[in-house]
Image (cartoon, rainbow, N blue to C red; front, side):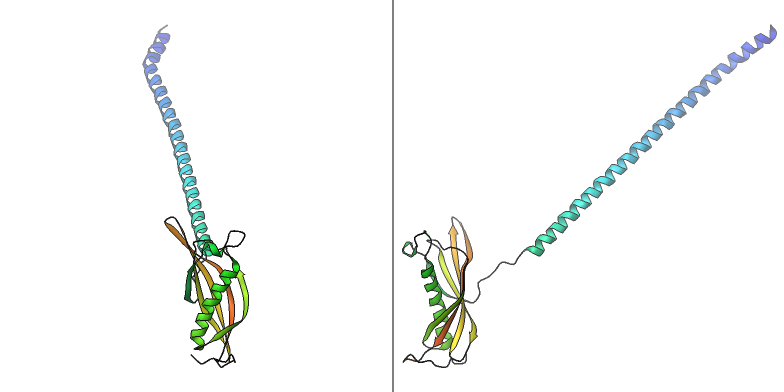
Length: 203
């Protein structure tokens, strides 16, 4: 009986220690568990941030590449070739049956522009003998300001070739556009007063 009482007293003394040890181990386990969860959460956050950063870098790289591609394909704006020879406003009397400016009138203005330039270069009378490589790019409308530019491209013994471009200055409200509508090569021959051919003087 004495032995039994001793065991009970020992158990009473050890019980608080056991409970404390259990609580300590439980707390440690919980801390470890939350620590693991925190680490996993942190790893997930890092992975998510890295993925977002990669996507942003890829998007930025794509935008840069797209911008560079656009710049490569971007064509420089074309400018008129030669010197301005004449300017003329397209009037209703110059319309064809379709409601656009008649191609014959446009051709006549270009011939005048080429003739003025050829006359200056040849220092005298000239006549049109051929028109080659004509291209009609866009229609001309009433109210367009037709601008003809002429450029001497070839000078022979008695003839010279003038490249003529027809541009329009088109206004719409407060804005305007300059567009090339027609171009072609005009061949002129230098003439004497009696109509015979003469040598084109050196400029």
